[in-house]
Length: 153
Image (cartoon, rainbow, N blue to C red):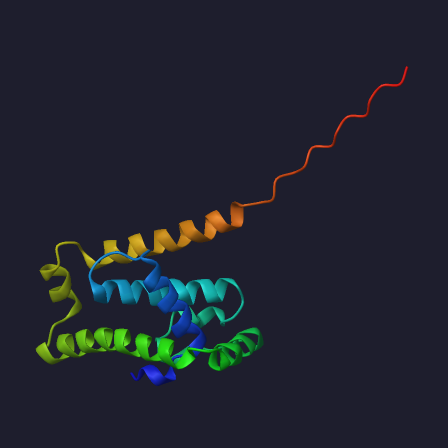
């Protein structure tokens, strides 16, 4: 699963989320959570196809709006630096997956070894993403009250 196949738009968005400090946990968990949040937000804003959240990061599909943003992110100054930073972080995820596969560990083994069950961590992550989506959807501009006319008399 090379990081080259992940769209630059997703890489830059995930890197910004990772650097913001919003994600918690180990470094690998923070990288994975940043990637999940970036994909879900880009789907929400119409840059990615809806099924992009269910596939591996390498199979993410961009909509036309996403392709335009992708080109803009490729041309921006410092794009290469951001991409290289994300590739270094993404290697952490790849190394952990390879270690799990190399050791013959199954998902049940990973759940048994961790302090917290894997399901609860993903549920927490989904709740955080849903909460962020709800809070952005709820914010509406305040209505300006009209001033009353003065009585003539």
